[in-house]
Image 1: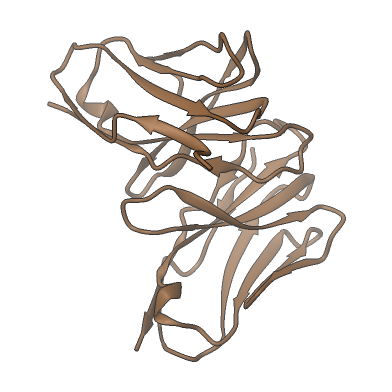
Image 2: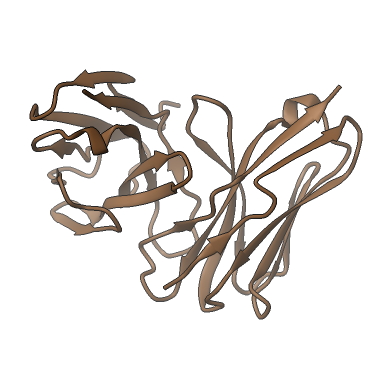
Length: 113
Length: 113
């Protein structure tokens, strides 16, 4: 059974810092991995999707990497801003049970002005 | 640009009552799903569908029914509400193929007294 873990559960950094969020998964047989952002009281917004054949994806100040063999992904946020404050979740689509995304519990990020 | 629309946004039920959470998408997505989000438990899949007339169970299906008569709509029915079903419910959709981003609705906050 696929398990997805995100550590730390919460992170607080000053504005302007570069930061890395971590996601690990137990079964490396995956189709893809997605990173989502969730603002309080809102739904989830997909930020980046990395296919199993890819090593990284970039969108603006965000860069997500995937190391399938070690079961790890990172989300790098450059030059953080207060508007980046949110909960970030990763989700894995496994080859077994491909219709069932498995989510981590998220990292709650606070960027302090 | 409606995307995924969920109604209602808030609902309070008494134990034993039944209700239907509505979900509609206008992106012609084959895949639709329902999640519940609880503190400390993360997002858990309730039911999903890969097309009209096709549904299947997720991780926590007990106490919930779904049907998919059209591509656009995927309602979630609570048969006899219990306090354990107090949660935030999210509907999500995507194209199929294994490598498509998941789009979420804004959620329904349900309280069962």
